[in-house]
Structure formats: structure tokens, C-alpha cells
Image 1 (tube, rainbow, N blue to C red):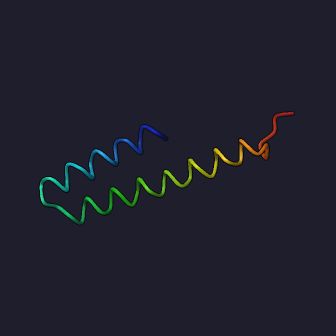
Image 2: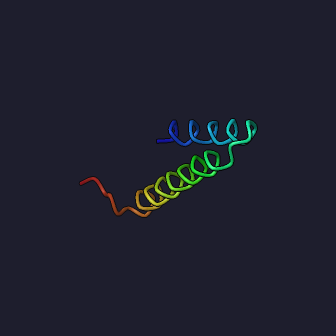
Length: 53
């Protein structure tokens, strides 16, 4: 999932440099959503909710 976040951030940066603000915003929003999902999963694992028995 980190790979997808990096891809979306690169797309957002390139679109911003090329003058496409709508595409840059959409890619950045997608990256933000994936970052939030990764952080939530990390915190759940850290707190032991997904305990392997």
C-alpha cells in the first residue's frame, strides 16, 4: 500500500507542475485516504487488536 501512496504522490507532483490542478488534487486526496488507512491499521496492530493467537 505504501507503493500506491508513493505513486499517487508522484502523480500529484507531476500534475501540479504541468498545470493540472484537478488531477493533482484528486491524486493527493487518494494518497491522503491511503495514508489514513495505513495509519489506522498500524495503530490497530500496535494496540494488539489483531492479536495472533
